[in-house]
Length: 152
Image 1: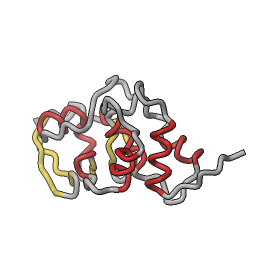
Image 2: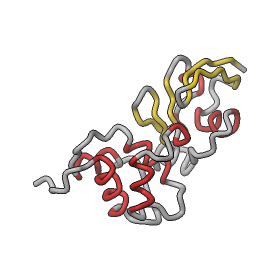
Image 3: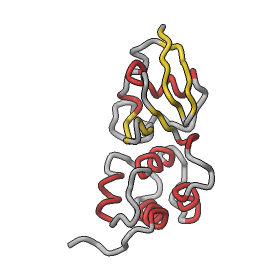
């Protein structure tokens, strides 16, 4: 067991857990932040995406020791009125909800005015088995004020 100090959803925290335990499990078990979901456990589906220092990362592939001194943001750290959360609800971009937190976290760094190809690339590591992707892309486009024109 090791104490690891890091910034979690804007707050400085110290968490004790084995250094090689998956960050996903530490967030869910030690921190009681269950919004981050496990889909595949192999970094293939994106359900466990969190931001580490502003970059989307599959938390099932990250050893807890790597959290030391980093900024980690989970879906719980995204305000309820954030445009992405609001637009996902408005556009019907969620059904079962397993992929939704990871999709939103992967979309967080998408720049304002992003085109559909940029949005698709940002979400390429995230799988959805329920909705298809049209509503998800539409929600992200609306949230970022995206350009609806397709790249040639």
